[in-house]
Length: 239
Image (tube, rainbow, N blue to C red):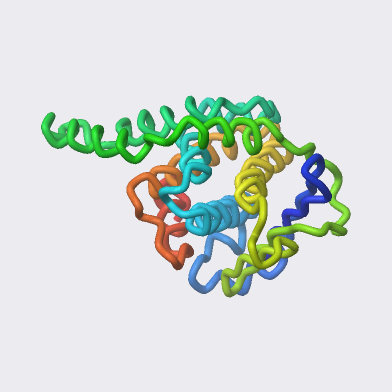
């Protein structure tokens, strides 16, 4: 299986998903053999978790992406190809809201407040960083255009084994945070267009996106993401 996200510029990007070869994974993940939707969700989860891990789970761009993922209305809006992404400050607030909502309902008040305070401390950033996030990353949403495979910058996921190759970013990786953020956002939009009339897929997608974000909030994204991706699918009842 392969997912390719190509940036032709900061204005245009194209995406291609190739599900051939998924049978090679079916020994460990039998659902992939018969279910294209599950395979696409699996690719999305692996891709997103790897990008979050590469960005760094405490990085402000990573936190903004998490705020997007844990908010069902924001993910649904992107699936409908609405490219108005909430501001950086709003996304950071959404991280806190999503994380607190995910906690057990019977948690002791003292423990709940302790976690809440710790999260707010993690989400406190210099105003200049938030302004940069707004001006240079969030508001500059590339168009999703027809894939032609001829780009200078790209992310490519292949399985098996699970590998993510970033090409064209150079030794310093200039602007890679922008491209990592919009590679995930673009993949959400792409899958939304593909499954525009499939409510079942959309509902599952919103759930898996939430689980990806929550895993990052609580520093639960491991360096090897495939087992967690499989666990997330099981949480949304994909055996």
